[in-house]
Length: 205
Image 1 (spheres, rainbow, N blue to C red):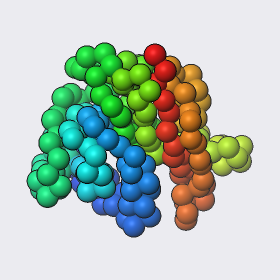
Image 2: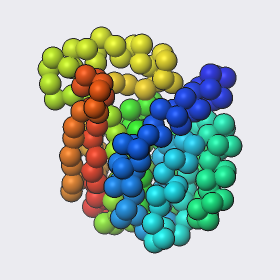
Image 3: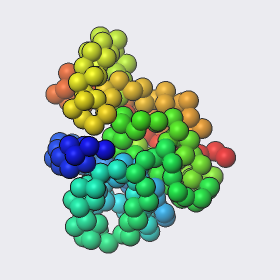
Image 4: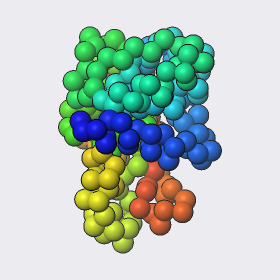
């Protein structure tokens, strides 16, 4: 990971995704979390303040060291133990069937080996455990898809490998996880370039 991705981009993303609209989505996607939670793409800890009291511990995965520095006061204020366990969701140092829930927010767009990461999430979830996520990805509109494909190289370069055009629904469909709740919509004022998905998928071992 280069200096820009490690030291600068996390600050930009912290500001860009810290608006009231994103807060509403974070609150919605975290409300049913409980027990020991794996969060891939922990970032700067933006979700921490929304974790319900039913969460007892968080296992955090993220490659950016500056994100941990920004997250530290948020973690301290919330008072839930957070253990940083790795840099890449494609290889999780956790036993099989060991966590109650998993969380991903604006992360599946960026993980290089996202299919392997989803297999890992399934592996470490207890039977019946759920991955809760909100992501951005491929629009269902063919017209908007054309622009997403055209602008994707720029997005990847400027945003640390983030893809505008990953099909989030299909990624879960093709993984060992199974959608039990799924909604999608365009992020306002982006012309449909940022199409959001929010929902939950269950691990059925």
